[in-house]
Image 1 (cartoon, rainbow, N blue to C red):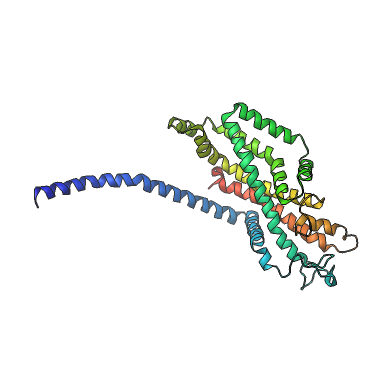
Image 2: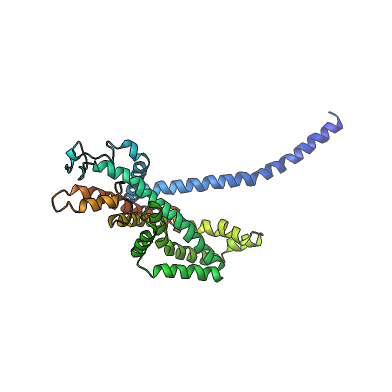
Amino acid sequence: MNSHSRISSVSAVARAPKVAIAMKPVEAAGSAQTSGLKAVLRQTKYVISENPITGFAFGLFILLAVAAIFGPWIVPYDPLASNTAQALKPPSWQFWFGTDQLGRDIFSRVVVATRLDMTIAVTSVALVFALGGISGIAAGYFGGWIDIVVSRLADMIMAFPLFVLAMGIVAALGNTVTNIVIATAIINYPLYARIARAEANVRREAGFVMAARLSGNSEWRILFTQILPNVMPIMVVQMSLTMGYAVLNAAGLSFIGLGVRPPTPEWGIMVADGAGYIVSGEWWIALFPGLALMLAVFCFNLLGDGLRDIVDPQRRT
C-alpha cells in the first residue's frame, strides 16, 4: 500500500467516530419520542384496564363514533320516510325502538341523528378552543391590554344566563346548524379563556420559557411551541367535558324550536315530538332519543376523567 492510500485510510478511520458521535443525538431524539409514545400507550392501557368505568366510556365513545360515521348506511329504514300505516307502533322485532306519529322508524332516526349532534359538538368545541384557548393563552402570557380585552369580554358573556344568551343569538341569526355552533362556542368562550389564561400566567416565568427566550425564540414562537403544549392536557379534559354540554345545548335549542328544523333527525327534536304523546301511552317516541342524549353526555363526562388520568404526567405510574 502506498503512502497516499495509508493516509486516506487513516483519515477515514479518524472521521468515523465523529460521524457516529454526530448521529447519536438524532438517534436519542427518535428514541425519546418512541419512548414517550410507548409511555402514553402504556398509561392508556393501564387506565382502561384498571378502571372499568373509563373503559366503558371509551367503548361508548367508539360506539358513538361508529354510529356518527356509518349511521346512514347501517340503519334498516330510511329515517325520513313516513308510513302512516305503521304509525305509533310500539317497540318490536320489526321496529326496535317503535315508530313515531308519521310511521318513521325511531331506531333509524336515533342512529342517523348521532352524526348531526356529534358534528355540532366537535365543531363548536374546536371553534371555542381556537378562539378562547388561544386568546386566553395570549392574555396570560403577554398581559397588558390583551389581558384586559379578553377578561372583560369573558365577564360580559358571563353576565348573561348562558342558555338564554344562546337562544338570543340563534333567534337573531336564524336557526341553522352554523348558528347553533357559533352560539355554543360563544357561551363556552369564558370557560376556555379563563382556564388558558390562568395556566399561561403560571408558566410564563418557568425555566423552560426563560431558556427558550434566551435561545433567541420570538415571543409568539414561545407561546405556540412552549406554553401551548404544556396547557394542552387540561384543555383536552375541558374539551371532553364541553362536548357533553354542547350536545345538551343543541338538543335544548331544538327542543324549544330554535335549533335544527324538522324533519331532520336530531335528538332534541325527537324528544319534543314525543313529549306530547307520553300522556296517551306512546312513551317510546321520547324515551329512546332521550336515552341516546343521556348516554352521549354521560360518555363525555366520564371520558374527561379518563383523559385526565392519561395526559397528566403526575398520574402516570
